Amino acid sequence: MGATTDLLGRPTTEAEDELLELYRRAKALLGRDDLPPCAQAGARAATVALWNVVNDLGLEHEQLLDLGA
Amino acid sequence: MGAGEFWNPKTETLGRDELGALQLAKLRRLCEWAAARSPFYQRSFREAGFAPEQLKTLDDLRRLPLLTREQWMASQGEQPPFGLLPVAGREAAIRWHTTSGTTGREPIRVLDTAKDWAWQAEMWCYGLWGFGVRPADTAYVAFGYGSFIGFWGLHYGMEKMGVLNVPGGAQTTEGRVRQIADFGATVVASTPTYALRLAQEAERLGIDLAAGGVRRLILSGEPAGSIPQTKALIERLWGAKAGDTAGMTEIGTIMIFECSHQPGGTHIIEDHYIEEVVDPASGEPVGYGEAGERVVTSFGRGIIPLLRYRTADLVAKVPASRCSCGRGFDLYEGGILGRVDDMKLVRGTNVYPRAVEGIVREFSNVEEFQLRLTREGHFDRIALRVEPAPGTSDEAWADMAERLAKSLAEAHEGLRFEVERAGEGELPRFELKARRTVDERDTPIGG
Image 1: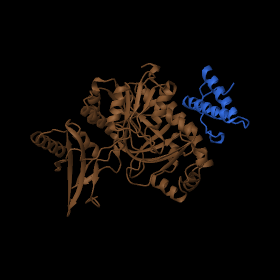
Image 2 (image 1 turned 90 degrees about the vertical axis):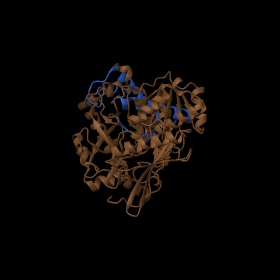
Image 3 (image 1 turned 180 degrees about the horizontal axis):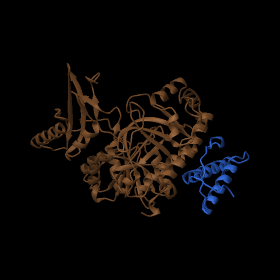
Image 4 (image 1 turned 90 degrees about the horizontal axis):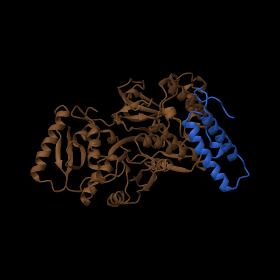
């Protein structure tokens, strides 16, 4: 599982852990170089959507430029 | 208030200390990003002797140099077309927008990545949800959908929330009024000026907006959304609640919104921004309740990091406790009060266009107006040109003009405003940012 605290150092909830895990998996997928265009575009959209969630909830704050987003 | 009234209850209800800690964590990362990737900030940090590791508390924010529009423009000139602020070029972006160009200046050009663009819609979601828009609504966006960023983010925010969205681009005003009625819109987004224009057109068409289905108006693009008299007029004509928001191309989206409690101010989305209010002359911070220049640091747009940007917006911050909604976000009392350089000096008297509009909007018979400043020899003249509603008799106009002149003089230390009647359709109409003040003087005497 991912981090156990948010950016404020507070313990994450079970739902937040799940969101972080999904976000990291989406990022990993987006970083692959063997995806067809349709999959890459979908992975990018999914990563961006999850970035907004983890950013809103103060779980993670980072840039995605190097992943093409 | 229940959690259902917040878009993001976790951070919208944080206490001030926790909110500050979150801002500091984001600020550090943003500064590290800017220092690593942006040629502009690499240079400005070096010149200011600043390094991100110096950020120990939020007060250390003031170690960062202020950024002005002039610096941004100079940077665009140095390296066209986007300047040195961006951390990447157009190949990394999915959107290219510009400022509206209503001032006649060269526009600022901005890029957005897919992540940045999605974040901009997210900011609108805070405001839309906070004002009471819900997925069951039908929204009509009275906007031209051009290169000006305007309501683009609102459009995608509505879609994200699950709202049925009607893009009202490429329409005449009559066409838009008819679509609002025909599609059964419950929410309309427009500038305050255009909300009034739509209401005038509806009246001409015999469509009773107040009896229709619109329940909420989302206003943006001009300070008028928080001028009490203008807001009251819009709410009366539409039979709907009007919520003010404000944003800017430089950040790509909104940074403040009025919540459903309508406390007379707009909440700052403080988990995504740091908003400082400073003395325009000294750059020193001013306290709660004092008017000063808004300075924004945005955690959202990664491709163009924005740190301590001087907006020239005039604001007065008040504590979150001023509103009963339960948000921990401070507010700007009265929204954006105007521009730092808005004030006009006429024969030794300060004239603020916002204050003039507040007086004019007390007269319901005003179709459009314009403030015109001219000079004859060494004598400054100020004229209020008014286009009254069609069919206004000479007698009614004379009475109205007299009362307008009296109210304006009383509010301006006896300064005489010449109130002139403009012909029907003579004054310009606006869809985006209204420009009702025309100053034809070279340099104000004493200015």
